[in-house]
Length: 260
Image 1 (cartoon, one colour):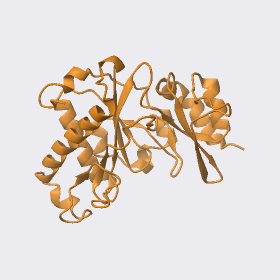
Image 2 (tube, rainbow, N blue to C red):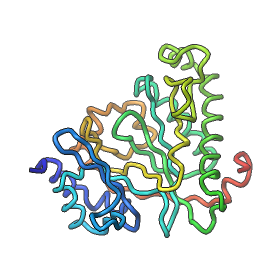
Image 3 (tube, one colour):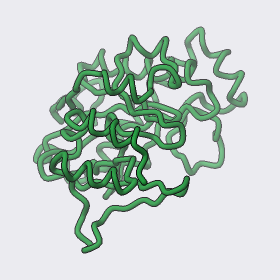
Image 4 (tube, rainbow, N blue to C red):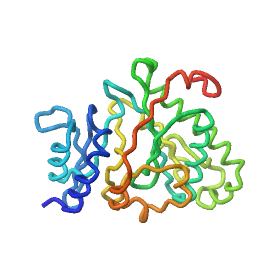
C-alpha cells in the first residue's frame, strides 16, 4: 500500500509542482520498503511525462515519491546549480549560498532558490532555447565556474573563513566544482557535472525520501534561520504559496562582469 500521508501531500501540492513537470521528460524515484528505483520511461519505453494531476496521483500511488524534471525541453532550458554543503553544517553552508545569491543579485540575475531536500540548495532559472549557444552545456557550466570563483574569493576574505576551516582541511578551497575530484571532498560543492544531456534536478515541492523533507522554495532571508527538520516538512511545503521559474536573457551573461 502506498503511504497515505505522502499521497495526501502530493494531492495538496499538485498545483504547485505540476508547472515544473508539464512539458518535460521526468525521472521518478520509486521507493519500496526503503529500496529506491529510478525510472525515466513508461513500460512502453516512452519517456515519462506528467501533464495533469491524475497522472501525478497514479505515479504517487505506485510509490513514485521523488520527481526530477529534465533541464532541457522544447520550450526552455534550465540553468541549475546544485550546492551540496557536504561536511559543512547547513547553517554555515547557507552563508556560502547567500554569498552566491548576492553575486547574482548584483548582476541583475533573477533566480528561484529551493532547498534540495537533502544536504544543500538548488538555484535555477530558465533560458529561451533559441538564444542559447550551440555548446549549451559548456555555456551553463561556465556560469557555474564564474559564480563559484567569485564566491570563493569572497568567502576567503570574509570573517566566516575560520569557521569554514573548522570543517574543511586547511589548504583545500572552501568551494569545489567537481564531485569526482578526490581532493577537496569536504569542500562545499558547486556541482557543474549535473549540467549535461538528459540532466535532471529535483522539482520544487518534491520529496526527498531519506528524511521526508521537501524541496521547499526559499528566499535569501530564510537562509539565516533555515533548519530542514523544522522548515522543510510536508506541512510547511503544503502551506507554501506557488512559485514560478524566472527567465533570464542569455545576453545578460555575454557582457561584463560575466563575459561568457
